[in-house]
Each structure stands twice: as structure tokens, then as C-alpha cells.
Image (cartoon, rainbow, N blue to C red; front, side):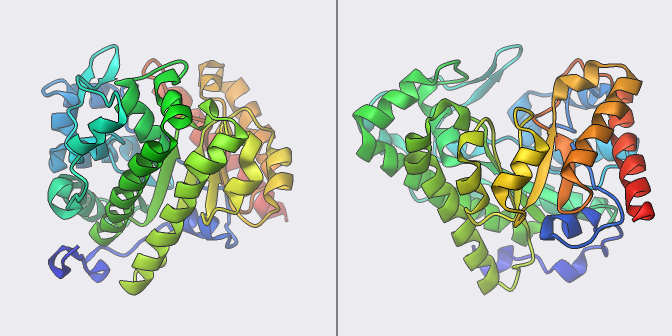
Length: 369
């Protein structure tokens, strides 16, 4: 990153609501902050309207559209954080791979990596300030347009999750092609994961210099690995990302940025994940809050973990579910969220009920203490 890419944070509007950041740092909060994964999404009619005019990755590459899509949920709901509208697959694109978003199917790689020899096709030394400049521009624009309302979260996919897409050529129920690499080509697998790690570190640091106030790393496909493979092919790189990003931000004088790790279905490795250098551990809905608290040793903030499908329930049932969740997690060192992203057919009114229930119930508890 050249000096010209560094944004001076003083130019941004002052932050009015820092509850999310306070919770991430483990500081005392007056209520439980809440945001939703995929809060900028197809469940919102205004999102569908904005997106109707161009394809998915064109939207990702247009800062004004990313900004608009990021802000839409905040106009509807009193969320405590915004997350930049983008996609984890911008990194394989920056490495020179072609990715298309097929409506109704998801992402497709016309030429996935088949064998270790294919690694030579990848652009190893990626200048993220050039290749991913559009994300940084979107973050800068959005941070200004937020006018300090809430903090802005930047994000990246984790190396193993990105590797699965690059080898599978899209989504997969088994990840058998990607896992075959781990068993048959461990050296090439590590080489690929290292290439990805280096780009991810630069990308995350770039997002902070552009204005991101927190970072989330998505290891969405952790559940396809067993403990041993997770330790060798995922955790190793997740640790390196946390360490490197924090080191580089410190050098830039930008070290006050909490990092969140969300490793879906990796409850088998919760202790290791909670000690991997991240400030917040995101949880999916398959683990009980009290168990997660016990196993993470109260040293990290926890985020999650309501089943997204609970939003299909009645509003009363949603409120009830939220109350139980907050009672079990407690109101401190906790950020409420869903245990995964929202689905396109969800009712925005039910999202409003979820957000309101988190705020109302947690404020009540904090007031009575």
C-alpha cells in the first residue's frame, strides 16, 4: 500500500454510536448491539430494485451501488453496525480467476483449479490497491455517507473457504474435490493457502486504511473439515491473518480495529478458534450459548447465534427466542446476530422484530443491574 492510499480517519464524521465496537473490545455496554449477516440482501425490496439493473459483480465493482446497498438496511432498522456490500470471491478474481454469478445457482468458476500445475495461472503478487481499489473506494464513500451513525465492518473470506470455491468451481455439498487436494497434494494446498493468506492480509489492511472500523473473516466451509485438517489447513492461516493484520495496522498507527472470526460449523475447534488472535468469535446456531461461553473462557466477545430460520416464526416467538438467547449469553462481551446470513424470502418486519427484541430486552437487564 503506498502512502497515497492511506485515508486519514480524522476526515471522517465522528462516530455517534460505538456500542458495537465497545462490545467487540469487551468494554461495558448499556445494551447488546446487533447486526445481521447479509443484512444488505434480497429480502429487502429496495435491494432487489437497486440490483435489478446490473449483474452481481458489476454491482460489487461500483462504489456508489455498494454504498447504497450497505445503507439500505440502516434506513429501515436501528442496527448497531453496517457491513460493506461486497463478496468474498473478489479475491479469486484479483488472483486472475474468472467468476460469474449465475442467478438461482450462485457463483461459478468456468476454469477451476484441477491439479497443482494450475497454480501457475494465478497472479501471485497481487497489488490490492489496484486490483481491489473499487472495494476501498466503496468503503471510503460509505464511511462518509454513514455520517458516523454506526461503525462500518469490512470483511474477507478465509483461505480454506476461498480455496474450496477455486477448486470446486462453485458451491458443493461435500467439498470432495478441494479435500482431495488436502490429502493428495498437501504441499500444493499449503502453497495456495499461503498465496491467499498474503492477499487477504493486504486486503484487510487496505480496508482499514480506507475507513473500515472492524473486520470479519468468514471461514464459511470450516464444517467440511475434521479437527486435524482444520488445525493444519485452516487455523494455521486464520492465526497468521490475525497476527499479520494487527502487526501491519500497528505500524500504520491504526491498531484500534477489532477482528471477528466466523468459522461456521467448527464448534469442534472452539477453544482453538477463541485463542487464534481474534477479538470476537462468531457462532453458528448449532452451539448452546452457555457451552460457548464456558469453552471460550470468557476472554473473547461472542457474536451470534440465532438460527436464521427462526425469523420465519411469529413475531412473539422471535421475541421469545431473542430473550432466551440474551439470557444465556449475558449482556456483556456479546454482539447479537444470526448464526448465518439471512435468506432472500425473509420478511423485513420479522427482522425489525429481531432487532427491537435485542435492544429492548438487553436494555431492561442492563438497567436493572
